Amino acid sequence: MLVVCVGGVCLMCVDVLTHGYCSLDCLLSCCRYTHANTRILTETSALTARMHRLEKGLNSTAGAGEPASNNDPALKKDAEERRKLVHLVRLQAREVDALKAEIMMLRRKGGHIYANYSANNRPPQ
Image (cartoon, rainbow, N blue to C red):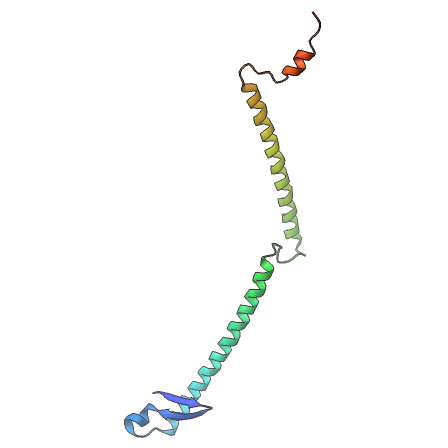
């Protein structure tokens, strides 16, 4: 059955077109269902709009790169430990680079690491 309701008043029923009449109970039940569905759709629309506002707020704060709670001691401890580990890795990378350079100098054929120092500081003969 199809009912068109405007302002709470049912204007047309398919039964009227097929049988020539429509019962009052049929019209009232159709209007009740239509109003209930309209109310549900209105609530859904309001909740969807609220969800979009909340997501927009979360996305704007998430881009800052800060933790969700600045007062959480566990998060502060993790951040400090991560900072220390990054510093340690950088120091180790510099040390590895220095060792690589020293190995390359030692591998050169005929090259001396301290050639200028040893040539200038020989004892007189």
